[in-house]
Image (cartoon, rainbow, N blue to C red):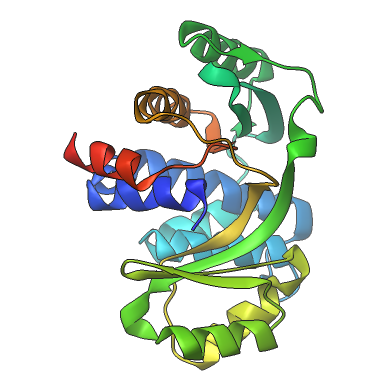
Length: 251
């Protein structure tokens, strides 16, 4: 399982996601709104909106909140704030590459907060393209292994166009090209498998291995950046060892 997935697993186990549900709802709502603004309010014809709605549902966002977010995007809600997407690239400590996907109504504020967050933790903001070449965009699905055994999940996923299936402790993850998202999603739905997380993410082509102390240092920076209001996702190219996982879980 990738470093990004392991980081998500750690936060789930520690209850961090529940403690920050309000912030999570804000991020999910912005994604739904922007998707509806760009491609319309019908998830059957708007792939990005379908993806955003599924993530919102997986995050337990109430149906009314999702519908209001769609209306903001389509213009039915005239009071909606206009957000735009912006991506920043840079480096955390120890030369770890990071990509930050943001949604903001004020790019000057956002870039200042991102730069400050990186500088404060001995990182640096880079130019566009400075680290993006080290990543691929992929689709992913994670769900509890209790929902489907590994062999069945592997067969289902490969037939639907996935590249790989992994099992780590009690979770199964399916990854594949962006173009395979709909087919894998439909196959899992037909098999009555409720996914815990799904979407698109940046996956490093090659991960860096660091000592446990350095890994923890970088993850503290990642967590700081994730808590910034305008940041939707933070990706990095650092592997998280079992020892680092244990140290994080013990904190």
